[in-house]
Length: 270
Image 1 (tube, rainbow, N blue to C red):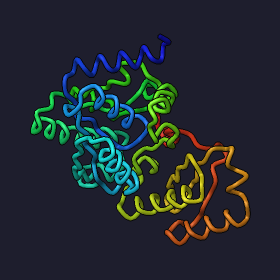
Image 2: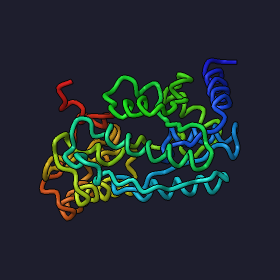
Image 3: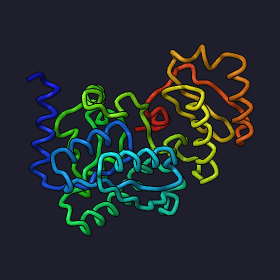
Image 4: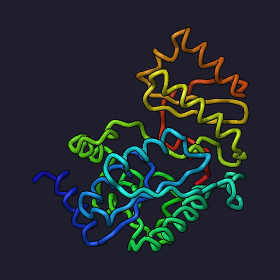
């Protein structure tokens, strides 16, 4: 057995030892893989919990609902409005911690109500090298991280997902829309909607990995550099500029560095 399949077996054994899990399910690459493996191993003792909020696009919630329905997985949707959390809208450096603590506290309560022993989340080994204050909440609340326990990387999860026929194996990476704001800039429902609609237009135009970062009235578009030629085609550039200005952005820019995971963390003095 090769290393990647040994890691999957380790994951399965770990989940079996846990006995029952409520998976924090966002319909992303990692949580979809984790949920499917957990359900394969534990059956009805694995449930999915998805948070509904203004920082979570409707398309992602719809995909989460569809996946659970297609696979016969019990799916619970919980309202988790980050903007109601004290201090969150001011976008402090520990924004993600505030959000994850509130979310996982709710999921732990749901798990208890349904007789589920543990809450599990989908971070992988790649997440250890970036600024991830949300992992502090994971540790404090004793939330399980089975993919990190099995030492699975994002690339390995994609490979295994493809083998399993999961539709997310080549899905673009996603993070909550609040991550598009430079730290210290006030997060509002209106601005979250602007970012959501801007990114959706890019996806509709066929761009794969996209981010629209918001800096006041400036939109900074991040896409894979391999797609620069496409976005700079006059008709596409003109359409995007016009549409994003209609949304409320005054200036529309392209980041020549291309897509970068966690690029807003560069503004932090860590």
